[in-house]
Image (cartoon, rainbow, N blue to C red; front, side):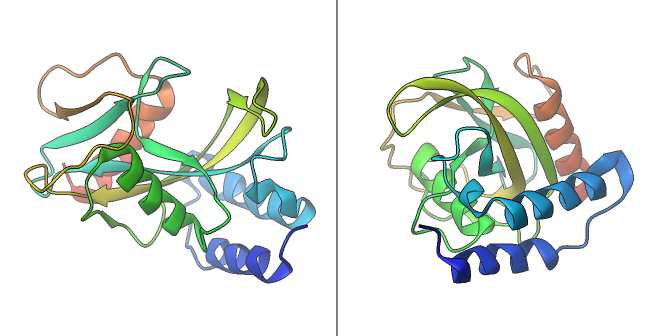
Length: 188
């Protein structure tokens, strides 16, 4: 059963953002809103056909490096992120929780509005434990974290700070777009 008040809270968060028309982001935002209206179950990974996720690209305060995680299932360097959990009260809350869980850093400052939206096909673990082909409707934020602050790792996936001016790992198109959004937002 899906809590209508919670769904309305997430819908209100979506409605509160000003989204640029460039790069199809406004159209994608409208599709996100339509999915949430038509399929309230999309806030849960239980909806195998596709569901919302939240993530954040973690940037150091000097805006010189980013923290990425080697995703264990897709075997690529990605931003921190994951599924909306029952205790999350907003996309931003979910992104912050995922950053803390995956990075080990406790003092993470997630931006108030997303940097971009990205919808992608992905193999996803179902509630039954099977890996199924699904769609992630990802709300992507930017987050600041001091790379020198205390870090207590609780997950096994490797993380690494990458200097934005030197060699970066091989990245997929979505990651490149998120990094470009960070460059524009932070004037990197």
